[in-house]
Length: 333
Image (cartoon, rainbow, N blue to C red; front, side):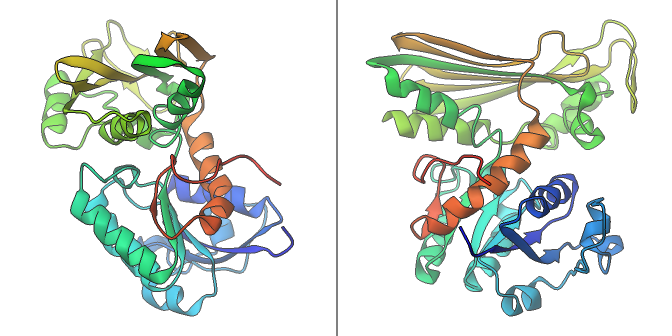
């Protein structure tokens, strides 16, 4: 690929800044714009913000409308929020400016059953403008949906799919540790779950993507969230967790056809988890049991798949796409 792909980075939190690092280390991308609404970041050189070896001479703006209209770019990497409702105006604005979208929004990954009206709105807008929209990441987007779906390709029949993502969060960034409730009392944990502020977003979307690829239509899904409690004091570089407080979260998604549990997704992330792993179990012919010892680093993998997805999304048919209906994504240089 001789011509550089011109990219705008929209959202410069930890994931967005790491995406900038990955984009700039490969010679076939040209970062031409950076957007963030956080006032302290506005006017800062994006190279400095992303802790690159040198400044880029490209400064962060909060004026998305003017930048998206004026800058010639093929794609926008959108890393702002997990909420489909909140990201909707951003996606539609990008589409209206004729630019493709690669996003990390978990609820955008497979919204056809969870938010059908929003999915249809985004899909129609993208088709009218001749651009494509894809949400992806390590999870949802790969480990708990696309990877097991691909693995069933060697099966004569499939009876059930179980996926485990068990993570040791002590080496993850502090926002992730707080996201899983580490250090909270049981009451605080339950209050945040009730308020919708503490959960791994995307299990339901992963179940629907996986089921759709298998030709299954789930009658119902459930998403159960509970704390994992410390039995002794645990100390990390950022936190000290006292006994009887939460080490993290154990979340289980179940998808049913009738009364039969067809899909089970186990997401567990705790400080000091003793046996981290990513594991896919397929009950079928043949049955498959595949494990990645120690698991896949979420931050690294999320940013890598975003960057690797860019040329695939540019070439994809117009509309709201999913990981199951685009060409395979792979590392390339």
